[in-house]
Length: 463
Ligand SMILES: Cc1cc2nc3c(=O)[nH]c(=O)nc-3n(C[C@H](O)[C@H](O)[C@H](O)COP(=O)(O)OP(=O)(O)OC[C@H]3O[C@@H](n4cnc5c(N)ncnc54)[C@H](O)[C@@H]3O)c2cc1C
Image (tube, rainbow, N blue to C red; front, side, top):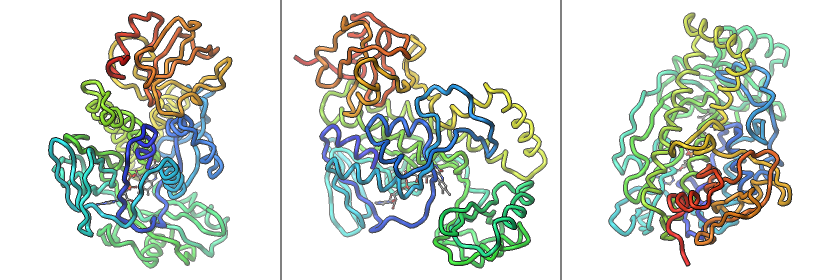
């Protein structure tokens, strides 16, 4: 839905095919991290997310938390607690408002491609033809399998039950038992939600392994008794599920006219709450590039840079979730490493380093040597005359922030790049050229240098 919105900003016709007629009741992701919050702000969507979510302090690695560092390089130094079904709905509403054709209850079952486009075949026999197709169809992606793209990594080894249900135990009893059990079993917990409902999580050890079959309430009770000595009187489940820690990364994000994004391209355990965030950020990277290819101005290699930029980012996320899973193990070795890391996190720089990893604000694409900002996303900054920088980026175009008083020019690219002449007290560089995804494509003050750089990201000059 994020990708659909991005493409619509550039006038691209988009059809979203969703095999389920209705969204599932399960709540997987619980929140958004800094970079996703920034992305939403860059498109004018943040207000509606803030209205439905709750902000919390940033921080946490494998459940270890320390006070947030004083200065994070962002105007949005918080976690936005918002259940995934709300995020999904808000992004779908946004995509629909911009004119996306969303078709629910339509499953893709076959695809083929040639030099001009892609043919998708749906379960109901319908055939659709498009110039490109992006598989955003989750970890068991049909598109990825039909493409024959390898998905190397590790199978699931540690399984967990998760569900929402009511319980009869008092909050005091719950807190006391949890404190005791969590001394050794960190994948155990019961978090109160609203109206007496709790989000309950417990290791699945010993429960049938078929993940396509949801666990029963009896299985939940049996696991709770096994780990806590009580089942807290759980009853009236809203939904029950299980998840594993399979960790895999698609070998290629693009095969000609078909691309992969989100869980279709990468899966990993939910530690640190990064999967949905990663998918939103994939879409933000891909949207303008795919639109450029469709509109005919994409420079050589632009669409392939989606893989070369996002694949390493996902590989790094997979690695940090592997590390976090080790730190959650009840074994004495990992527990000792955990205690050591907790001590290290008292050093603000260590804490900051981990926070920047999980929130994705440390991501730097490998452009070329040069200014320290190159390849990084730029935080939001206040401008003297025109409000905030991110408010200038809502149209999804490139942006030259020119603090030289207007000595620079993007004539020739004015249809793709906005020229904002203004000054920010928070930005110590004469000018920056931002890609539509907010990453710095150039920084400096020399017009000839800028003219060298513009075609690399924005294609040939016109007019
Ligand atoms: C327990 C748990 C907790 C999590 N917590 C967090 C968290 O706190 N933060 C976070 O960022 N992430 C979290 N995640 C990860 C997050 O849920 C996923 O990364 C995210 O849902 C991926 O989004 P997606 O759109 O790529 O895939 P999905 O959400 O899986 O969506 C894929 C869609 O494609 C549809 N589809 C599948 N096949 C077809 C087909 N053939 N034709 C048409 N449609 C099809 C599916 O019905 C589905 O709606 C968690 C995951 C789990 C399991």
